[in-house]
Amino acid sequence: MYSWIRPFLLCIVCYSAYPIHSSATYYFNTELEIAYKEILELKTSDATQRLTKEQLRDPSNGVTVYLLSLSKTTELIATEDFAAYKTAKAFESAYVKLLNANNQPASPYHKFCLAEVRMQWAFTKIRFNELAEAAINAKQALSLLNDNLAAAPSFTPTKKSLGLLNIVMGSIPSSYSWIASSLGFKGNIQLGVQMIQAVIDSKSIYLQEASLIKIIAEQYILNKDSNMESIKQLQAKYPNNILYTYLYASILSKYAQSEKALKVIESISDEDIHTYLPAFDYLHGELLLQHGQYVSCRIYLNRFLTNFKGKNLVKDTYFKLFLSYWLVNEDETAMTYWKAIPNVGQASFESDKYAQKIAVNNELPNKQLTKIRLCTDGGLYTKGFEIYNLTNLSDFTTKKDKLEYYYRAGRLYQKSGKELESIHYYEKVISLSDVKNTYYFGPNSALQLGYIYVKMKNTERAKYYFNLAIAYKNHEYENSIEQKAKAALNDLK
Image 1 (cartoon, rainbow, N blue to C red):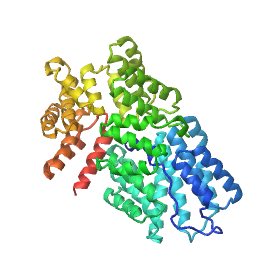
Image 2 (cartoon, helix red, strand yellow):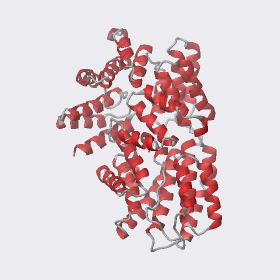
Image 3 (cartoon, helix red, strand yellow):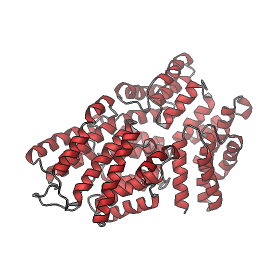
Image 4 (cartoon, rainbow, N blue to C red):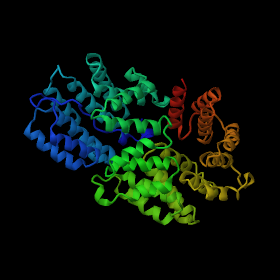
């Protein structure tokens, strides 16, 4: 469910902006505030040790329980350690029992902490592909939060959590509509953003978390803030926070600023990484691949495979390792990775689905088109155009390669700032694509045309193409493209 918005980035802490006296069952002190900051910095081991001492000192404090749950789920989501997850699953019910034992009906913090624990484990279960159980958790959290909103409408934490749920559920792809149906909650992106903004405007202790949620929503759902001002400010304010540093590098990569992204990634030393984050090695390898540094990229991609204990992005990493040999004509070595793709990892993330599809169908990628793609993704536009100008449609024999030829031209022109020139190529891709069963070239061409016409203030054409993007089915990036198109249509309202 959350593969399109990088779920571990959303597993972040929230707690009261209003201090509670220490005789109550929910309160913060200096040690708990330090533990909270350690979790945000992914220092989960340090945080857990500190929280364990606090729990021994005062077993009745529900905030300690809530933060223990947060520390554990943050670590599980960041590492995707499946064996550790199977062992830790039983912790959820233990945390809930401890919170219920500290029941203080008059305090909105009670239901809020219970809801947050349920949400934390919902995100964790999604990460480990247990969607049915995650839906049950989300429904429990939603009920608790709605009760809190009705009883204490000015209670800031509730708005933070309901805002997040509204954004996520309001943009959920149709393939996960059963989750929304089971919750009885469709979500509302605009309402969710308003709630998050209200938390930011309150200048409460939730400011940092709410800002992070807003950044993720704008960048990965709403396609806003292309200047990246929000993440720049957050990362500059907390330069030693590796979670924010990773997010900044990831967003830079999203906007094809791979050179800057590499500098950000390489600014992190091993001493800064308190919880090993496999995503760092994966992103580092991907950026080097875009720059044609094939030998160097293998170091990080292989380190990812060696240390990563999860199943997501494994197929895609094998595909990237395949490319690192394929593009320098070391075909024999490349094919060992190619043939392994169907037998490793799982196809839950959309990049994994793409690698799985082309490997199973033995659709070896065209080397020139792949180089254009990597140059475009990395922002190496001059080199991309040099390669493109040496190719012709007559060079390709398969429908997939012909579609990709026009699509790569469209992406190269659009991302290099020549959006008007890209329209022709995107329209050509759409005219050759099958709406019912296709590659992602057609639907993403429609999505990009929608964005272009939004900039041109041609609302009707934009709506047409966003709806067309949604109409395409059975392609590799269906969830993310549909989710972005729905968010864009909602924004146009």
